[in-house]
Every structure is written in structure tokens, then in C-alpha cells.
Amino acid sequence: MHFITSWVLAFCSLALGRANDWGYPDWETDSTLSFPKWGGLCDSGTRQSPININAITSLKGEFDPLKLKNYDDPQSDLQMVNNGHSIQLSGFDDDLIVSGGGLLSDYVVEQVHFHWWSEHTINDIRYPLEMHIVHRNTIYPNMSMASEFKDGLLVIGVLFHASPTPNQGIEKIVEHLKDVKNASNINNAVSLKINKLAIMELLPNMDNYFTYAGSLTTPNCAEVVTWIVMSETRPVTFDQVKQFKEIEHEEGKQLTNNYRENQSLNDRAVVFVMGQKSGASGVTGSLALSLIVLVAGQKFL
Image (cartoon, rainbow, N blue to C red; front, side, top):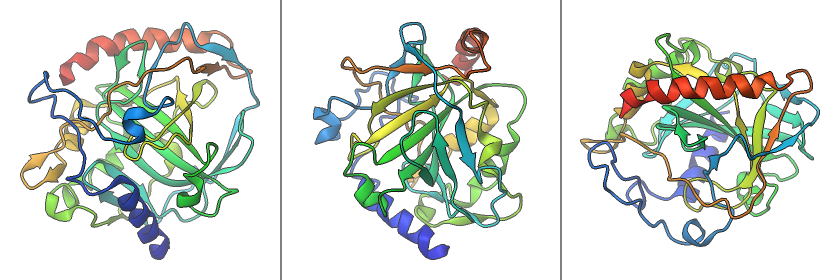
């Protein structure tokens, strides 16, 4: 298991480059900063992510339910690392598999990481936190090969809205951030052994979601990702997000935000998938919640 964890970390380091090769503007210090050019496909691609999702103009679709296997298993030796760009989890006890819906293959979880603020926006609303669950298509033997094919990767995006009530799943991660937040600990994994975390604890209802064809949101920005962005959000507190913002990417320099700016849709279809049992009320409730979050979220600025 530790060999697998090390391989995943090594791949991500290879794919994303060193922490000082690319980065994010510190918009909390200077809101006038322009987003940097990352080069290659990141600048020239036509199916880039993240995007702003317009819930009203999205196409409406209906698929069989998504099926999740082992997502509710408490992980006994989950590894967490500050990779200089995010907080990442890996080292799962068993394969976490998603299938069904509109997917033509099974996808297995490789790693989970976080962005503060959110990368995707819904109706131009940016949320305090976004979680990405990165999956590999099981027809490909590894991430390197999967990243060469348009159906290679699946990423489930979960947005978190501001709440006075702590998120218990997020808290199991936050309580270990002190062990990795200093720049001297970049790429040094720690084990989340105190409180076992099941990935299902971090997920909302999976009936309603948006899906589109896009890319990785970090270099090399490969356009090989099927995105599933959940329409229902999860709660997180101001203090929990603040602790993510204290992560260092360089000695003495905090990673106050790590989201990429929205990319052009370029005539891509965004489909809103409505669960067969959900009816229209699911998206209506989500939009109503978004209006509340828009007001509450300003406190993070």
C-alpha cells in the first residue's frame, strides 16, 4: 500500500512539476493580479477546466444512478500530503470504484485533493471550498497511460458552502493540517490514523449533478477529464477553510488560494443530470441555497 501511495505521489509530482515552476496569484493580498500563463495546452487548449456552470442553460439529461463501491469504507491508513499546490489524500485500503450513470467504464479513485476557493462556479457563484476526487479509467493500467486518452480520467467535484456548523469529515482532515502545513514538510505524507475517514462522509446526495468534457485544472492541463460536478453542496465553516489557507507553498508564504480562473466553454455541452426520483425540486433547492451562499461567502474575501 505504501508503495502504491509513493507511486501516486511520484506521478503527481511528475505531471504537475515543482512547486516553484507554476503557481497561483495571491488575490487576497492583491486582487488586481492577473492569472499567470502556464504554457502548453493550459493556454492553447479548447476543452479546459474549470468553467462557470449556468444551471439554467444546461442541457437536461437522465441516466441510471451512479454506483459507488467502497466509498463508505473507513480508511485505516489514509495518507495526506501538502504537495505545494494543494492538500492531497491517497493510500486507500481497497479500490474505490464509480460506475453507472452515463459512464461507459468503471473508474477507480487515485487521489483526493482540495481547492480554496472553489474552481468551478455555478451561476457565477464561487464557493469557499471544492473537493476533487480523481479517478482513473480501469481499462488503462496507470495514470500515465490514462492521461493519454480522452476517456482516461473522471473527476467528481464537490462544492462546499459557508456554514456555522463544522463539517465532521473535513474536520478529520483539518486536525492533521498542522503536521504538513510548513513548507519544510512539502511532499512528506502523514497518516490519518486517529479518526478513520470514509470518502462518503464528504459527499452530498449523488442524484443530481452537472457533467461535461474538460481538463485537469493544473499543468499539464490534459484534456482527458470527464467532469461530474455535484449540484448539491456540503457545509464547511469559516475556520475550517482558514486552516487550509495557512498551508505554505514556500517558506513563510501561505497558499491563501489555489483555484484556477474560469476557462471558456467553447460551445461544449454541459448536461444537468436529474435523478429519476429527484424531480425538478432538486435543482430549485440548489439554486435557492446558492443565493444564500453568495451572501455568506463574501465574508471569506
